[in-house]
Image (cartoon, rainbow, N blue to C red):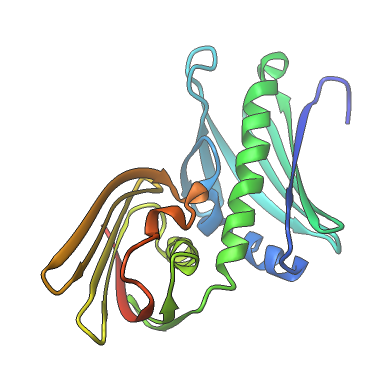
Length: 232
């Protein structure tokens, strides 16, 4: 790379097999909506929006995905420049390198750092969700072996991979326990669990990428659920 290319990298622990990473990255239309600055995707045309950058420019690119033995490369080519995202397996870590060559190179350091970190965290979380005990049985319906505070976030992220950033999950267990989860803009907004006459409602604003077990602790979830999920 020449001196005029701005580059930033970020590494995360990645215990999942490299093949799982490649499966996630082979469907960019599912993972891209959870990248920082993402705006939209139509076919192979991707649009990003970097707020507060000069005059609030948007960036439209044509995406090409390339696979190598130990890396995956997303190349975004647009009229303002070329954005390259390289995903590499380094031991038990995933390294994401974001490079920009084009308009505004000198001031793109911070946005690229946010980009590399956000992408690495997104891929890590969605790869972990691939191991959750969830089986899709038909369109919009999922069978869940057992929901616990630890598996609930993975199940929600797994469904997000199919439905995007705005969806509603509703579920019912054999004893009548009712569960609902509302996700808007990639953030968990509302969690409701009803068991008999007791109802718990949690209002939140947690990005799915950061969603952990804490929100689900103490809820009556330790059972098998049949759940439905749909876009909203």
